[in-house]
Structure formats: C-alpha cells, structure tokens
Length: 493
Image (cartoon, rainbow, N blue to C red; front, side):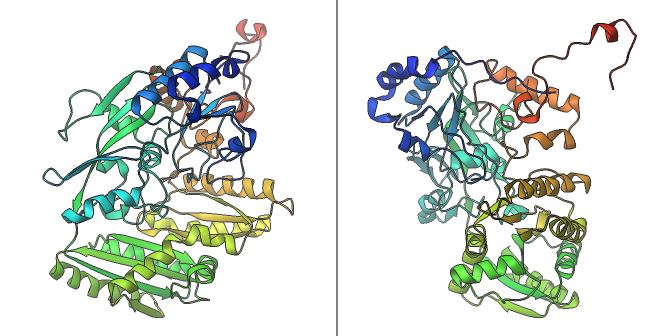
C-alpha cells in the first residue's frame, strides 16, 4: 500500500511565518538561505533537500505551538535531533519546516532509587550515562555515535549499539514519553509502572521514525554498573572463521555484552584515524566483551578465548586495563567516521541476517561489490547479525547511482537471507522503496492505518518509512480499475 504525500496550501509557509515568530520567538525561526543549508540532510549526505524554515523551540509548549500552526496550514514538518541518522530520516521536505530539538537538552531528573531519569530529546546519549554515573548507574543503549547522537533520535529509530546483544535496544530502556501529536496535542505514552493497560502505544511510537509525533521528554531506565568487564580482540585469517566463532560462542550458552566485527578495510580506516591498536592487514577482527559477576565473567572469558583459538584466531589481544579497553572501543566507535579517511563518500546500510548466515551474507556482499566495481567496508554487530556494510564511492567520479543501487541490493539481500532491511538505523528515505521486499501489501496497509490514526493529514515526517507514490514511481491515489477491467474484459497483472 502506498501513502499519499500531504497537499500543502499554496504559499502556506510564508503565510505562517509571522505566526511561528509570535509563537516561539523571532530568534527561534531561521529563514536565511545559508542557515537553512545546515539542515538539508542528516548523516546520509547522499540525499539533500533545503527546508523552507527551521524552528528552534525551547520547551514542550513551544513545540506544540509550532506543530499546531503546521496542522492549521497543512505544512509538513520534520523533527530533527543531532542529525546523525544514517537513513535520511531527518531529510526535510522542500515545502515544509524542520523542528529542531537541540534547545531541549535538560536532564530534568535523575532518580537513583527507582533507577530512572527524565531527559529532554536534545540530551546526548552519553550525557545520560554521565548524569547517572555518580549513582553507580548508566544508560545501556550505546550507538557508536553516542557522544553526539540525541535520545530523541534514539527513540525515533529504536537505536541499539554495540551492547544490544545482551541489553537490548532503546525500546527496552524507555518507560514513558511525553509526546506532541501531529495536531499539536500533548500527551504521555507509558507510565511509572512497567506494565500499562491497553494498547502498547509506547512500543508503537519507539522506532516510528518521527512519523507519529515528536518526543519532548523521555523517561529512561538506568542499570547498575557491572561488577566485572573483560574484553578481547581476536584476529582471524578469514571473515568466515570470525563468523563461525560468533555462532560457536552463542551455541556454548554464552551471551556476551557485545560481539563486534571489522574487516580489513574498516581496520585500515580506524588505524589511520585513531591508532586504536588493531592489527592491520588481517581479514577480520572480532571484539568480544563479557560483563557481570566476576566469577561468571572469568569462567566465560576463558571459554571464549578457547573458542576463538579453536576457530583459527591468529592473535588474541586482551584488554589489561580500563585504558586499553577504552582504546579498543574508541576504534570500533570511530569506524564510520574513520572510513571518510579512505573514501570521500559512502552509504551505510544496516540490514540484519540470521547469525548463522553472516558468512554467507559477507561473501555475497563481496560478490555484489565486485560486480558493481566498488569497495565495501564491513563493521557491524556480529552478535545479533546486524550488518553495517559501508559502500564506498566518489561523487566526483559519477559513482553515486551505482553505489545507491549496490546499497539497496545489500539491504534486500538481507531480507532474502531471512533477515530485515534495518536493525537500528531505520528505513527513513533511504530504504523506503524496499519495504515491499520485506512486507506484504496487507502489512503495509496495517502500518499505514496506524500512522493515519496519529496523523490523518500526513504532515508528520512525510515520505519516510512507508512507500509513497512520489518516491517509488507509483501512480498517486487509490487504485481505480479501468472500465474494461470492471466489465470483466481484461485482468490486471
């Protein structure tokens, strides 16, 4: 099923300009063409659209006031956090506005007794942990961009990170959200208790990619720091051996806090950028981290090292200090940015495959890259099969379209292997036309019905997540049979 993009009133944004300025302050409304260019894309720089306006509200009430104006004039709006998303989820619409949440960055409360915190959407992921640290607590989801990505964006995309294998995704660590709905109403989804009666609207909102409303305050769960942490980097002659080791570790009944993999290209980029101490030239490096009670961690860590050696690990590097562990993770979390050292442009995918098919997926990705005449660097969450292939290309050399096609082929390959189009980066604008590869028309119709219940006018982050006629080349509007078809004289193929 395809969604209709909203019909915007002619000159709606200029007509509403004075209203926006009165509602949130003239200094919170950007209309300078140069300033607007700063918001033309998110971390997926291959797609760019300059918005008509950028709004910078400071409070929930100001967000609601801005949304009510948009609703009144049928102006499309796109919520934006730090702009670190990698699927075009914050890509503006040309005739719409961007509502930036960067000024909503207060940690409203840290409650160590109930192990929770209330934060605004502009607070960075890492700053939640920093606020909780004096109480021996932390926020478990840790995307690689956690130093700069914001909790509002994490909620929109249901982000995970390196430690999602053991601790889950954002949805597992959010207790309640204050939301501005697409008509400007303010409500709360979830509550103080873990189990809420009625429909799970909180679960529906998390991961909805900004299509159901705007989060203006998030109540997150905090965890106690583990008693012990052990980390090892294992070098392998082939990616297949590394992939088989991951399967063996899980099959042994061990659930590490994290299992990450990087290939030759990714390691090369990381070492150029941050000199994290990885071995250059190896086919794959596997990062395995265990945490928990000290006795359990020690026993499992011994077994993990045995399994690495049994599957052909050429070298094991055990982090002997917190500083060495930090260096290992600095390298892994710098990987996406570091790839810019070896390629001027790249697409990042994040399809998921069953853990037992990682080796097959990597082999097929290599074949697709060779066919396209492009390079692909792989760095990903191996523990749960969440691949992050980076398709390297040069815009100047005219390789954009070829790279975009390769990236889409990789995402759809993951579906064909029994997986998913996205693990944590979202569908956004990037993979929207691939959604029918994973979901049936009835599936998409159900999603569209839910979206329409929240946003009947279709103004809340339009063109994302679900296929639209404009994006996918389909004829707009509800399908109407040809008169000859209605008369039974021909069939629709």
